[in-house]
Length: 490
Image 1 (cartoon, rainbow, N blue to C red):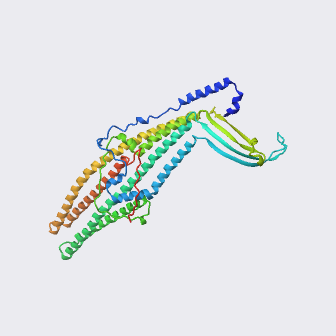
Image 2: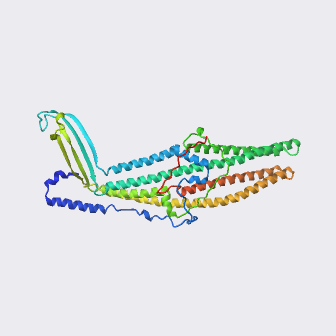
Image 3: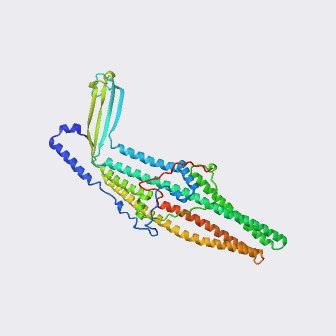
């Protein structure tokens, strides 16, 4: 229902005008009390302290967290990722889409003005209600049209607030995606590096077993031992070779994954093998769990979605209140092109319009209930994100602690098994034991070495997960970017 007050107001008396004003004031007060529903996001509790953390330590500082691993190749890979990764490009494009949507919502705060220019040839019917003197004529017109919603109930403002919260949430989502991709890149790189260590150990084992096999062949030819020992030596040598082939296959998988992450093909991706020691920094959680609310991008995004859903409750409620619009049209119109710019060709009108929803059955109540339920869902998801953040942090600390202990035990086990293998080989050469004892000792020594390497790899991955749990180098106030650099690993 549309009421044009410019036409209506001159015809009504002062008492009627006063009634309209009082009604508008009453509706204003009514609407101001309807849109204050607000989920209590501040009531979400992250806990007062960590179970295993140390609140006296500083939290992970913002910035390029991967540089704390002191790995030049990892730094180069990160720069290549930021320069060429299609996954990163897609994440940034999604954020830009949300930013564009914010601009669309903000445009509603300003009047909309558009132009209309027409030149038409008309022919009216002679059999109509009004018989024209000349049924055929031309009409030329140029006009400007104005449309502006007077935002009495805050519908437009709350739409903008919701769009702003959506954009901030998309900033958090983008940061979370970038953190996840960079963590995956770091994990893949270190998995490849530890696979290289395993390959070195197994390749040395293959060479050693080949030498053993050749020695046993000499002893068999000399009659000092039997073909059974030679068959066992052949079996162990081929078994180690099969393990080496499996590791080479896994290395290719990690290599191909790295190539995809940095935005290139495996054929164009060159990466040197690295045999130097790997730095294993510790990332114990410092500060308090409440700091995760602004450090974790996913938690930050979840909170902003609560704000967006809350604002949309007000938008939904305002949609069922009278809508005031200032509308106007002005320009020139003439039947002759030569007189189009004459003063007598001017025309125009301007004035407010009111759109009043009168009967919509239960639609308004249902839509408001739907918006409120969406806000409650957003609040629940925010609480879940906070709990997950604290859980991830606690788990990363627990993993690091237990893996450190496991590494200490495995180092002692590996040293003892290597010594046992050496002693058993000496005893075999002295003829004190059979070759079966040498085989068992070698198997244990190889298994201990590989288990130690895999546990060290797990500890390195736990450190990276600890970085993710703390939000990486991101915070709600700062999102560090990689310094410009050129990468060339070829």
